[in-house]
Image 1 (cartoon, rainbow, N blue to C red):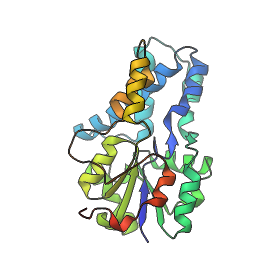
Image 2: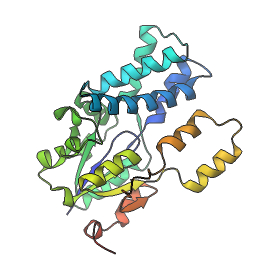
Image 3: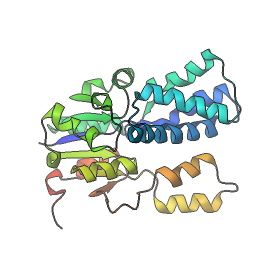
Image 4: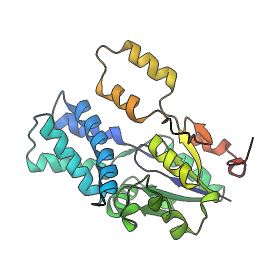
Length: 251
């Protein structure tokens, strides 16, 4: 059997589900807050790793929300700020997440998360969404103090699960993460949640381009780094049709 390692944010959990809290707090600004917040959140992980100034993902998430609200000229009292932030502990799983994880587990595969999230954030999230019983391990980059796509982050999988990179199927919807995992030596399945055709149509219909559409352009299409994933899927359930032993072999 194989080891399947999943990214959390954007792969198992819909980060855009925070929009209910941002829109409730600031009507008319919810979409913009949500997208800018996520963009800065990712950017801060990369900057902190490059600068060797690590702070955990909860701190990064607070900092990026503070940046977003300040930049947009929105003032949130502490109670409202904390209510928005708390949504990251209650993100909505994608509809296919639980069923896919359960199906893979029933086939005898080892299941784990490797995430930039802090350990306490991840533990709360999987428990709050009742996915904890489907996990063999929930691994945070905290142990390495380096965010993905640093190779040091991916090395935690072998350290904690004992599985060498060549025997890991890494699953992510985030192109930067898929590329990082492929460079590290994992077999990679990328969830193409936004197809090129659908995005092109969305751009043609946009007037003006909405923040969510711009986010898709910047963060949800595969990067041109010559590190294409070995398989592209459109649903987590598609993993059931993938034969892990064939990945990474010449076609």
